[in-house]
Length: 145
Image 1: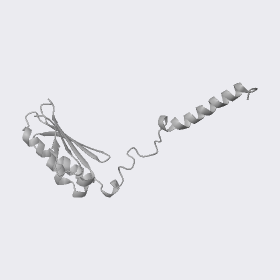
Image 2: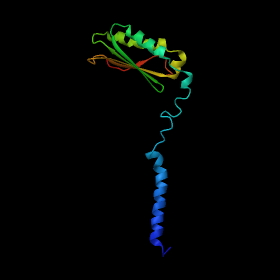
Image 3: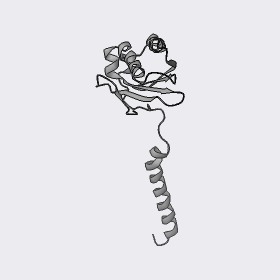
Image 4: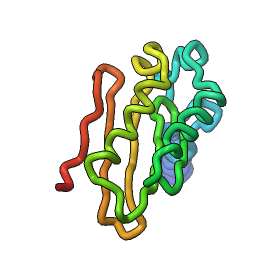
């Protein structure tokens, strides 16, 4: 050891660097082959949302005179629906648009997915967010009154 003091120090430092690399590898280089959601989406194939349901939701919402546009997006177990309404829309009636979601989705879908609806006007005078957790029966609304 005394003869090869410098070599022992270099080998020790190299071993420490290799060990640190393997410990920190998972943090610096995440495994992208694994699902982004982990196991939170287990069973999603048993409760699919059909394209005809999405079309039906958009069509039923657009039947209201005050609705200008509808956008649907599914992110994991969260269904997002964005509705833009006209500036002169009745603030009490716009929240009733969320009932279309409750009427269109099956009981199994409502118990599996969280539903979220964003209602806004172009001038942002009307701005509501409604959220229904999979265990809830009705939407809870943001308090923008």
